Every structure is written in structure tokens, then in C-alpha cells.
Image (cartoon, rainbow, N blue to C red; front, top):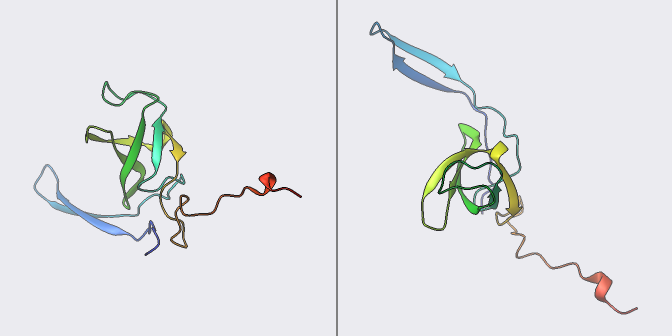
Length: 116
């Protein structure tokens, strides 16, 4: 499995201004400021609307490499929305780490339960 990465390679945007002149600008994606990955479960800390209320636990559908601090989340009904990472808190990690191992595949550390 390939590692999940968020490169900061520059890209160009072209648009036409109000006078009809074509403008081209160079943009660089901002750095990713959180440790949430796609397929993780997050909890909303600030209400967005009636469908996405504070305290709801939702799945992260995707994170765009061009805007890595805005996450697309989906609820149980299949409705999706975009939210800032500041309004979310990670509640359960499902995404694989850099070695391709998910937290559910790792062995539990129950050494304190073993008899001497």
C-alpha cells in the first residue's frame, strides 16, 4: 500500500479578470497542520448545521492535497460536507500508518494482565 502524502508542489491557476484579460498565478498548498487522515473517525466540536451537529462522530471521506486543512466528512445518511480541521477532533484512527498497518491490525499490549 502506498503511503499517504500531501506534497506541497506549486501549481498554476488561470482565470479571466473583469476586463477579459487572462491572468495566471502560481500557488503553493499550505502545510498540513493536523494528524487526521482519510478513513479516520472524527467528532465535531462546533455545530455546522442540523445535519452536522456538535458531538456527532463522522468518517473522513477525503482530504485534498491542495487544501489539506479542510476535510470532507460524511455522516451515516451519506451526506457529505467540508469542515476545517479546527472544528474536528479525532476520535478513532482507522487509516494505515507509514508501514501500511492499521491500528486495528496491531497487537494489543496486555502485558499488565500476565501473571509473573
